[in-house]
Length: 439
Image 1: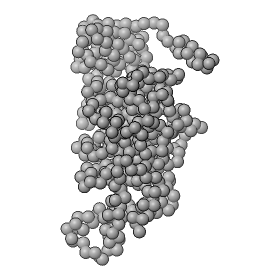
Image 2: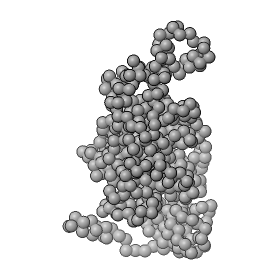
Image 3: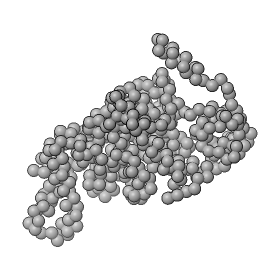
Image 4: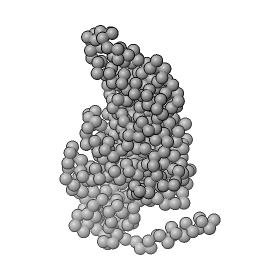
């Protein structure tokens, strides 16, 4: 009890007894201009606009001595001279274990209709800074995710960060659901950023299912919500994941998608007046990406918790070298490439194992497992090089022993890489199946 009372006392002492107010002076696009005391105008501070309806916002820039507010809510009822309450603090959240199984918005408020959320004791910044590089532990042992293609060809270690690169409709959401159900992690935190409103309930009830939801916290910001909400949602997911990591738990963080975060940041940046660069993305987009992606990873040195993260990237026009994909690939510890051509021939998950790379391999596999993988990769690569000649009948069996071997094992490897959404396979089972396919 003394500990609880001391925390409550510290929170009360931290409250600012002053109340700052300002006025709306203009509206530029979807940004609201407001005046107020200079000491209350700080980048990232929150504000509330009072009128016929209450509109919350965040200070994202300045124009002279006026603050530019990116609204979280509708701006249709805002009028000139409306009163603005300036809170002068960045968003905070108090996660707890009672949040497991719940669906929340970018502010940590429940949106699943299951009643209020119990609040934890420790407040946490939603947009916290990543841990210091010198204070961080190293990544742990390999994490069994239950997906054969990943367990073998792009294995993840505890605390590793990977990107999933795919076009629309190739199966990213299904792969995320397979990971949520099959990964050997203590807690799953899922951030759905810019999702279609129709698909959110389907993902939670059907794709994720009761088994996955029971140990998950889902953060949702749909495509119709304001850009400020879509930008804040992945940071809320990171804050919740950090809470469980600091409790010593192994967390799997799934964010879908980084591209929609980049689009939200671009929308805000262009409104503030930033110059557009490649494909219209503003410089703040590329500054925002590492602030989010670097938050995942191992905990502090000497602590046992970790955040293993997968961030999906919706590649524009199936171009895996577009600006956001290129920037994310340079920050993360590997990438998983999903291709439409593989999905079109009916093999799911549509992972191209030859183009997918985990930067912590081969250290996470045994020598025997690495030898099997080398044989499998060589056969898959050789078949891909000769595929056109084989299909048109230009290659004659017996001309090359290695090509003959690649043709022989190809069907078995394709069956191995194909996996149903409710099917789970451990590391040992995966490599046993691989050894059988290569016999």
